[in-house]
Image (cartoon, one colour):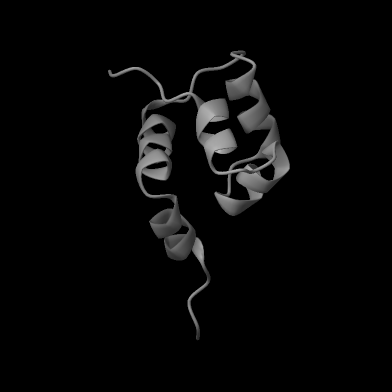
Amino acid sequence: MKRTPQVTVIRRALGLSQKGFAARFHIPLGTLRDWEKNRKEPDAAAHAYLVVIARNPEAVSEALQPQPA
């Protein structure tokens, strides 16, 4: 597996607080904090998600918006 994207670097590049990043990308705040403190490593799915967030955060935000009924 490729190197895990540094969550703190991604979050800071987007100008978001931990709380803001967690809310925007639907990641539990405790999980985000664990990743940033290196207490836990993201699993394969979370790793892929972080890569997508790093490359195209606007697309991820758009995809996570509720769809009109």
